[in-house]
Length: 287
Image 1 (cartoon, helix red, strand yellow):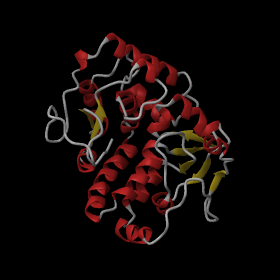
Image 2 (cartoon, helix red, strand yellow):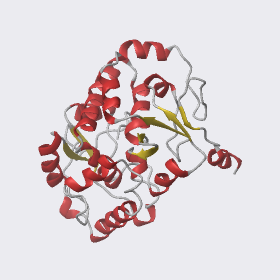
Image 3 (cartoon, one colour):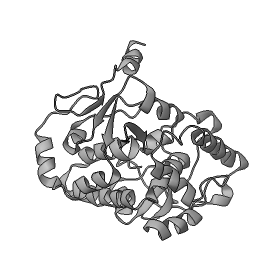
């Protein structure tokens, strides 16, 4: 939800928040949410991490229509101390990090058109709320998100936002988690996308690699299509522990001296769950 180049709209407060204006959503807006929700709920239960489904349940997100942020925030505050605040779209990095550091999750207050069900360039209320908010009901993941926000404030001072953005991308947005002998989804960019929910677990094309903080910060990513790489965490507890117990200053210094890793690369030291064929990406290039 961050975009350093964006100017604050006149209707937004200093922290970029706006009223959700829930009563101004049209019947079509609510119907679009319900259609997206039903489609994802029909295929996610055996694919997504159980903590996500538990979050949907405890937050009562199966209620028809776009959730009211005030009601959602009341439930979240009781569970983990988080709130959901409305913004008109992408916000500057410093604003984004400040909200996360103070346990506020920014969510777009608009929803995609019916002809945009499968892809929308800018995150809308379905991506932000359905994709992100259920895991904010999980105490450990909620703590990770706050730790990320505080880390973002430090990264801003060090000029390392681009490196930290890769961590967000490959965990919060497009992360996989090990579950027994298999893998499950947890990244919001995956669980809010019907196509990528299938692709990330089932397709032979992408690499699936064990999570390593330095490796992730060196790895490029793409924003316009399915991922060529997915990184797999062991648990939310492990992800939080690595975030809290790593001295990011020396890590940034080290990463800054090393070359970026191309998206389709597998290193000899990688823990590889799946060595992908990269057929999907190569087919797009050929086309």
